[in-house]
Every structure is written in C-alpha cells, then in structure tokens.
Length: 372
Image 1 (cartoon, rainbow, N blue to C red):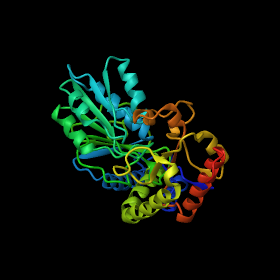
Image 2: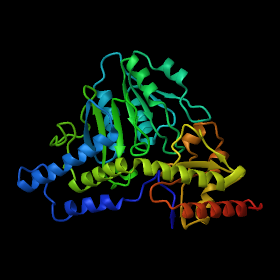
Image 3: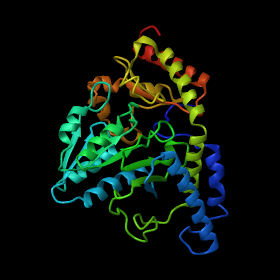
C-alpha cells in the first residue's frame, strides 16, 4: 500500500508511539488524582502541553487539551457566541472552512446569529475586500483556516486577524493542517489543532486561547482543564501529541525539504493533462489536489486499491455531494467529481510517490480510453 492521504490522517511517528506506551500500560493513573502516580501523570501532561505551546509558537495565551479539533472548534465558536455582548451577533467565516466550522455556524444561525460566509477566488484565497466590508462592529468572531484541508491553500490569517481586531472581534484559526507544516502567524485569538495530523495519536486535540479571549465552557463536570474543559485527560494521548509536536519542531527543516522534492516529483509526473485546483504558490505543497477532464475520481480510487488517496475531505467523503471547497473556487459538479487529492509527507518515499503517480496516470488514461 502506498499511502497518499496525509490530509485525512498521518502515520503515527515511532517516537510518539514509544512515548505513549508507558502511559497506556504501566503508568495508568488518573492525572487528576492527588496520589503520587496521579501527580506523575499530570506532570507528563504538562510537559506535553509545553511542547505543543512551543510548536504553536504564539505568546500570551494558554492551551487546553480536547478530544480533537472538532471539539476545539465547537468550543471556540459556541463558547465565544455564548459570551457575546448585546449588539454583537455576527459571525464571519471563509466559505471553504471545514465542516466542523460550517456546520457549527449553521447550528448557531438557527439560534439567531447572523452568519456570513466570505467567498474565495479561483485560487481559493478569501475575498479580502468582501471580508473588510462584512466584518463590522456587530461581529463577535471571524473564523479562517490557515491551510485548507482539501486544496492546501494558505489564507492570509494575520491580515484576517487584523480586520477582526479592528472591528473588536475575536479571530479563530483552524490550524489543524498547518501545525508542524507552516508557521502559525501572530494574530489569532483562538487556535484549534489536532494530534493525528502531525504524526500523533487520534482522539486528542487542543485549543490555544489568548488571555482574555477564552470561550465559555462547552463541557461541564469536573473542570479538569483549567476550570474551562471537563473530562479526565488521557496521559497517553496527551504525551503522544506532545512528542509529535516536539518532533515536528526538531524535523521542521528536513520535512520542508522533503515536501519540496515530493511536490516536484508529483508536478513533473502528472504533466499537462491535469490541472491543479487552487493556488500553486500560496499553498502547502504536501497537498496535491488536481483534476482531469472527464475523469471519474471515485472509480479511479476503486481501480487503484493499493494506493490510498481521496476525493477531498475524509469527513465528507460519504455524503455523495461534490466538495463545497471545489464548488467555492468555481468548479462545476463535473469538474469537482473529476478531482482527486494526494497528500504526502515525512514518511512518503520518493520512489513510492513516483510509482503511484505513474499508476494513477495509467488508470486515468485507461478509464478515458486515451493514450497514457
């Protein structure tokens, strides 16, 4: 199996697996217990928290662990909405945000909030003129994903945060696809991240909160995370996430150089019969989303079962609907269905990627009954 679905999830780093093992087996104590074993588990979580805060790289805030980025995003949106003051009921988001943002905003719209979605150009970048117009003194929060999960486009988050702050609004950045891959710029007040997108374990995420911008609690109970998020933390998951974050910082330059080589292999291998979706330059190059006229992307995946790739977001893959991201950049339903997404990274071999590209080209040509 050649694994090219890094936006859906990443392989668990051996270093993260090794760091987790003792806390899943011998050191199983509840980290919120006052016992010695509990205090040791709590100390391990604090070390992991420090690794993660360093990887995020922002100052003046605190970090709370969650069950994943979906919880972190829900908490950020619903908790900020709950704390809003009279006259601030508008929430602005980019049209290409993840479903965790868009579906939560639909829920808030049903409870009286004025939800505004900002369009993007064919390159996938937000219409900044529209954003400046729509973010007004009634706005409580602006949400923008740093690296898009479907097409890899990098939004100007620092500029978006400046617009939000000028209007007195909070800025939420979904940095799930960015952490460990591209620097998170100064500006966001809330940052959501996920363990399994940076070679850590599934089932753990975090919300970074600038001091003064903390949302109201979403989960109630014991208040284990700084009195703001209830629930017993898993030392193994937190430690694994922290180890993955530390490794991402250590390997940052090597990973970037590897991605550059892989991008060039894919770019050269697919050739002129394919079109890249979204900006080529303002993009994380470990995301290769492209289309070929007349291609049936779903059939291509079925034909190439020894290569793991996707049509887009793993979270929406079963809906049968064309990608909202591809439609937002102006693609027709037919063009969206002729698109595929390859994701590669740290553990992708150059020869494996080249072989996969050749196999995809051959299968696509065979499907369309044209020469490869």
